[in-house]
Length: 513
Image 1 (cartoon, rainbow, N blue to C red):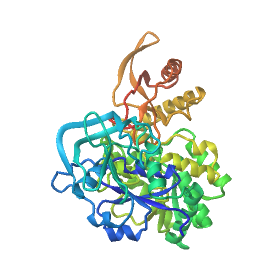
Image 2 (tube, one colour; image 1 turned 135 degrees about the vertical axis):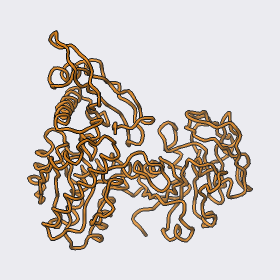
Image 3 (cartoon, rainbow, N blue to C red; image 1 turned 60 degrees about the vertical axis):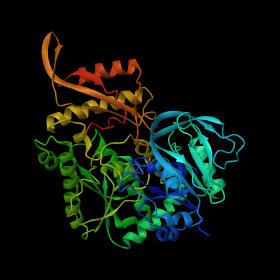
Image 4 (cartoon, rainbow, N blue to C red; image 1 turned 30 degrees about the vertical axis):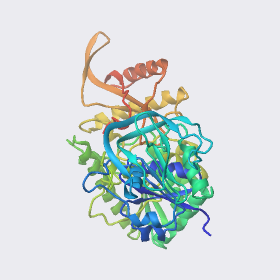
């Protein structure tokens, strides 16, 4: 018997398919995401304990709308459909889904059927708040199914066929706004699918170590280190797997935070005794970005330049064929997948050149940031690396709106250091997902020392989040904002105004570019 059970999340194009998988993993059950094109034979070969069908942006009535291989319903596996997934369960098994003109969005009051035993709603309140996001509605359940919940607007918000272990919920139990959503998911995992809560971070590390060894064999490997937690954890994990076969490369782009290079060298060269190459190529990156304004072009230029530097370094180390990257799932989903719209290209995903010679090693690509931090702690990385706030791979280039010049980089680097210092001084650093400075492509008029100034504003961006897929702007205390404004204007030459970004994600993104 396997050490842990697997639940497969079938992705119908939802931005939050990975969030479902994450909630499953939080219950210490292993999960993987598979495309909706998977066949019954392919799915059965993976021997899952259960299947969850994600939501999706399409209507089941649209021509070409994604469907599930109907034979999957005959595999005698527990199935839970969420939103679009629930509609597919109803429609493909003989029920009816219709346009009613009564879609639901946001927080909604759910009423659970009284007197009906439901494995999903067992011991949960008969009235609870859930999060809805749908336009179509299930109007009639298939034969053998029963309705277990409804809302004031729709008569069927949950359905199930307990004998066949088929379930559907119109709402989203994976989001925090559904107050008992995690409990509902755990009822499916443990009471319906019979999963064991045995998947732990230690098992993740062991699995990835085996996968890395199997992938690279005895060949040489290089790893791109940026100073952030993602690449640091990836490097530590690969070093655990293959030891001296790994050479880390810190590419000093000239677009890093203050003190970045020193911290990287101290951690990996001195503490971990890892072979480290410090490539000082700031002029090369800044030259490639000269007069480039479009953020997508910035990301692609930076991604390609990174690869060219790595290729040159690899040539000095027996032509290493493998490149380690700290790619996470939000990088993948935001850069665009087959079923998810592209939000922006990440330099280490959509920005990679087509003629790249490396084979990528990406041991973190299925994980969220909080999971990566836990892994970093277990691998023995220092706290100031593990809990460092996320920093974009392209560095300060995507926090400088418009042209990237040495002068503008130095202004932003100094401003960003002050933001970090003051946020730490206020004891907020660990509470915030990210807090940083942005340099817009405008100048503003000001008065300093009775003289007119014409200088840059600095925008402060601070957000709270669990996974970077959604984020809310942080309500920073007024005294912190006051200190930030005073220090930024008085200590950073070229700055005469400070503003605060109070946009959530969505509709904005966390970074400005």
